[in-house]
Image 1 (cartoon, rainbow, N blue to C red):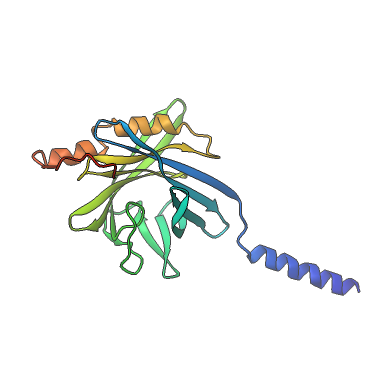
Image 2: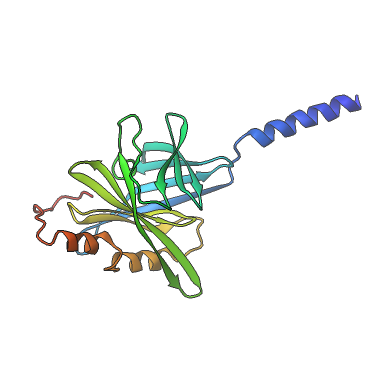
Length: 217
């Protein structure tokens, strides 16, 4: 009887160790801003991140509807991995500025899932006694459409900028993350040496934009 109980407990323990367990749930609230840094639309996207023991489950919501779901893993040294066709694939490299294919079977969902990504650079902001490292990526969806994304180390993506429209979505609030996110993002969008609005404009000083009156990224 005792051996049977020990065997049963061992099986239960083995199963519980192999099952992905929910550890933490955070929600990123993204607001849409225009080229004058004026709020156009609040909570245009909400991104739910569930931390499991093997990966993070990411769900993107628009108007309370789940429009995108994917699995993501984070390596502090190498970069961000996503599961593409059930294969763990490096999609955002923290070390090398090489272009990586990131699309899911030739599908994309702007601005979160694009066809290619390239590391541009990174920068660390010091706020009080804390340091916050941000990675800047160029994400291409097509030959004429792309985004600049900004990933806050150990937290997640906090900004997507579109140079064609000069609009961007910014994470102004994160649940269960005790960080000064607004101070970080405020520093980011005003940084003329790091934010793509300024750095790309220096490369294309005569870039022509059509009148962008619509509420879109």
